[in-house]
Image 1: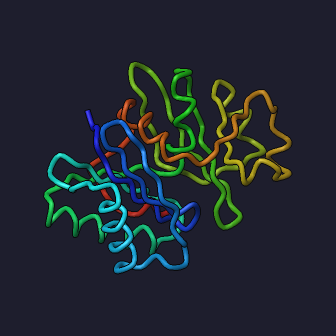
Image 2: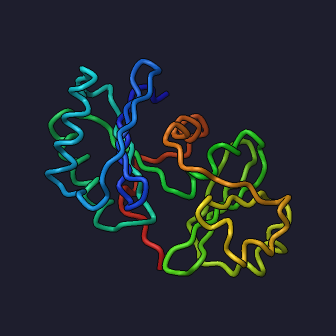
Length: 204
């Protein structure tokens, strides 16, 4: 079980770094327009030093793979791999679809997590049998989604809840997601972070 970890979330919105150590959580917001290799590395070094923490092979680095700023995610990966080479840490990834769905995993129901980017809607389906499994994101037509996913909870991020197409969906099916890095713990518990195919999440 992953216990102590560093989170790097630089997708261009709510850019942050966070530490969990000895069951204590520390979060620092970053300025999105200043995320560069050198800047991010210095921010992490200062953040770790502030809490007198030494990154070592017992630590895990968890990166948000997107969707979002492609350059921000690539920088996160580059910095994480640099730390991995020096400190022998492990690297895992999650994505915004899963983070938004995390608070609702206890309901043991099928979940459709929805995001909007470049004026298009995308969904990732998270299904439950004995464990949760998730599909790759795909472009969707919200007008057809409610009928297609009759047995699912629909997770909508707070910033698009007032879109006209969202308002046409039965409100009883919708759950609103708010950004909270502490929900990474729920993804870990449900084995929804990965240490393979570590690359930016690209939506075509």
